[in-house]
Length: 314
Image (cartoon, rainbow, N blue to C red; front, side):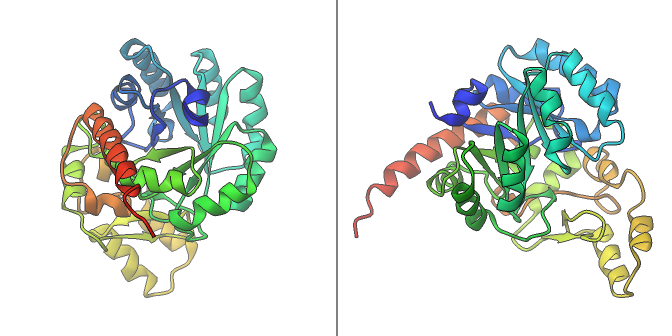
C-alpha cells in the first residue's frame, strides 16, 4: 500500500487518464476491474450522456472509479450536480481554478484531485484543499501546460513543494516509466496515451491504429494562443502551421479550429481533418490490447525494472 492506493482504495497506483473521446465507461470499468483507477472523461459528454456512463460504469464494476471534469466545461454546474446525484466518490478536475469547485465537492464527501503543469499551480491546488495533484509534463497528449516543463523535471520540483500525494503524468506508458516517476517522488502515475490504444477505448479504430504508426517527432504542441494541445502531425496540423506563417489573430486560429474538431478526429476517425491528440510516448506503443493486459504488463515491467536497478553498483 502507498498513499495513492490508500487514497482511492485500489490495488495498483495506476490511474487512467480521463481523455476526451477515449474514456467512456467501458475503459474506466476495465481499468478499475484490473486494479487501477478508471476515469470517465466528462469533457466530451453532454450532461445526460455522462449520467448514462456513470450508471453503466457502476453496473460494470464494483471497484472505485472517478470522473475527470475540465472546469472550462460550459455546463459545469449541471455536470457537478450529476456527479453528486449519482454518488461518484472521486473527481479529477482540470483546466481551471481548483478553488471554484473543491470545497463544494469535498463538502459532499468526494475525493478531489486537480491536474497541474507547474509547482506554482500544485501549491494553489493544495491550498484549495484537494486531496492529491496530478503533475503533468509537457510530453503529455491533448491539452498541455504553457510552461513546457517535462515530467522528469516537473515531478521532483512539485514534490519539493507539496505535502499531499503526487501523481505523475506525461510520457508514462510502461512499468519502467512508472518506476522512474516514483523514484523522482511520485506516489502513483496517470496513464493516458497507452489506454487510448486499448480495446476498451471509445476512440475510433482509425485513431487507435494511427497511434501505433506514430513515431518519435511526429507530435507537436500547437495553438498556444487558444489552449496548448499536443497533436499528431496530419493535414489539419499542417493547416495550423500554414496559418501561423501569416501571423494570424486569435480569432483566425479559432475560426480554423472550428467546432468538434477533436470529435471528428478521435471519435469519428477522420485522420486528415480531425484533431488527433496523443502524447510523445506514442512512439513506444505498438499494439492495441485490453486494459487488463496493459496493467498486468506495466506491473510486471515495474517489478523487473525495480530488480534490475539493484544490480547497479558504483
